[in-house]
Length: 127
Image (cartoon, rainbow, N blue to C red):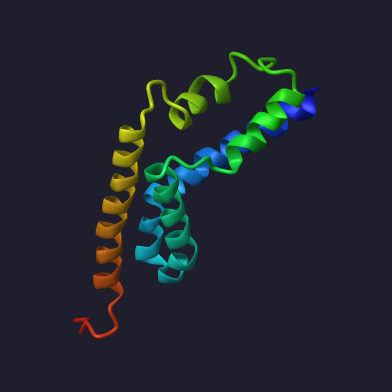
């Protein structure tokens, strides 16, 4: 059914956006420090999923909608061609997942240090 194809694509798109937010969302914290309340738990979750090889809850939801849609009924579209390989790369091993999780942590530590330095209220600013 077409509605299940749309739901599948929406879940894959949300999954991709969540991954982008986990990796790059810390940049928003530099501008809007309160964004850390949303980003930090997301980054911790994203890193933990990779490091411990957990299954993200979006994956079974996507598979559920894909099965209801009849499996491969949307082959060749943008989502399948460009987003699926990014979210589910071939030859993804546990070791690679651990490296990806460590990279998420490393990138976000650097960004949060920058955000802290930029937004430190004790810092005197010359105007």
